[in-house]
Amino acid sequence: MPKFFYTAKDITTGKTSGGEMEAKDERALAQDLRAQGILLTSHKELVSEQTISVKFLDRFTSVPLKEKMVFTRNLAVMVSSGLTVSRAIRNLSVQTQNKAFKKILLSVYDEVQAGRTLADGMAKYPRVFNELFVNMIAVGEISGNLEEILDILALQLEKEHDLTSKVRGALIYPSVIVVAMIGIAVLMLTYILPQIIGVFKDMDVKLPATTLFIMAMSDFLRNNAILSTGIFVGAIVGTKLFAGTGPGKRFFALTFLYLPIIGGIIIKVNCARFARIYSSLLKSGIPVVHGLTIVSKTLGNVYYKDALAEAIAEVQKGVELSKIIGKYPHIFPILVTQILEVGEETGKTEVVLQRLAEFYEEEVSQITKNMSSIIEPILMLLIGGGVGFFAVAMLQPMYSVLENIK
Image: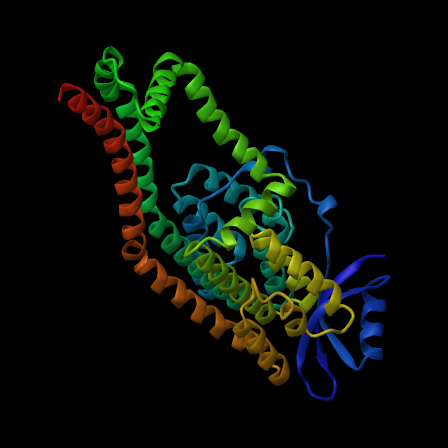
């Protein structure tokens, strides 16, 4: 039996609502809704993922978030100006400098010209237009308020881009320092220290354990350059492959959650994304269960996915979302539970969630601004410890030689 997405109006209150329902055909859908006291205003038969032809290579095509953000904002402006969707897509395909994105937009334009919806055309490129994007566009086309939906979606992408940029920018400084430290250590072990160590080998002096350890590392790196490179590359590739497995995702997700500073940022970023995306979906008229399903696919941390998977099952039984979220205080702070509870009681869930998203986004902004001042002392300790270790390892044999001379 086909499934329809519909918008309808309550006969008594005049309030507009939307949802999904299985029905034999359009007439049966209207009759079923009429029996519930609501009048069908618009509908669309949902197309299953299996019926949407997605080319194999298209599944791996991706476009930068900033490119999609600009596209969505410009599309909203063009649609609000009275241009047809197909003409707006055509104009934007000419304007974009990204060749891959230009090709995708032209393909979407051809789909729309052939009579398919914009959402169906975009669904062929899941790496570019994710489920959140496609579902919101579909709702806008069905309800007739595509312009409003595009504005909401553009704002969502702008906030996501801003959040991602701040976190990435905050991590650049420590990443550069750590890479530089590793590079300097390898340089010292392979080129500088061997000249000093050669002197120690000629001396009849008992070397301390630290010096012997550094000598062993230096000899290994110089005599086994290919093997050392292979081990290093293998460790990176192996870690990446392990991180893609189920146990690996759980291990790294749990590790990052409990890391000092980093764990707090991850929790705030995920809560901000949950609140922002779920709020946007509810504003668009997407049903609660469907909205939670989409949100669970957009959050990266596996423990958030698990919490929302339970939430989807329990909400279908009539349990309030705030009660389910409250079971996970280690990933959803008590503030999230309280705000969500207020929204459910007042019927303004999307409004309070938007404010919650703004709160956490501001929190992340403040943390990332102070990131360098927080991390600098830690990096100084690490650098000082590394330099001190090398210094002690090199100076101890010299002291032994001086004692023997005396």
